[in-house]
Image 1 (spheres, one colour):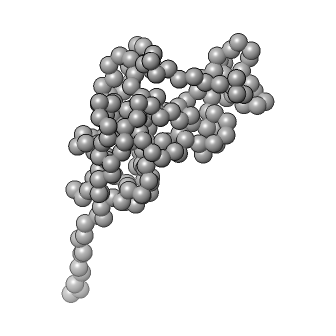
Image 2 (tube, one colour):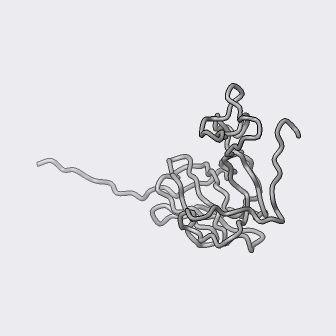
Image 3 (cartoon, rainbow, N blue to C red):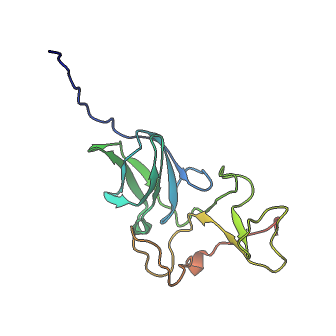
Length: 178
């Protein structure tokens, strides 16, 4: 008869190498509600804990993941991010909390270049397909900070009314420097 052996090992702990704004790829302080891109090793199947509270995860791969900073972080100066996989935890990473850290998603996904924006007719806003004069565009971004109205961490966005950035922290956009 033949003998077979099965080696059962543990999965390696997640290793966090970089945390950046998922739109601009800028590192540094993070804002409540900001979508982060995490880079490292063994990130597939992780659970993200921010100050011990599970953070919503948008996706995971072995080397990249995306999580949302809980809005409850707004009352803090900093938070600790820990990744957990199969019961093993990464080293904690201290993240400073900022009121806002806006990032605009770009058409090429690099954080540089033309904004990922739609014209009023839902067509992609480009140099050859600009918005009509006086028209409306939709710009996709993250890191705007706290919003007016209650936003419950870990739940889908409300569909009845869009949340608005707090008036005292409204952002200003310029087109061609104007």
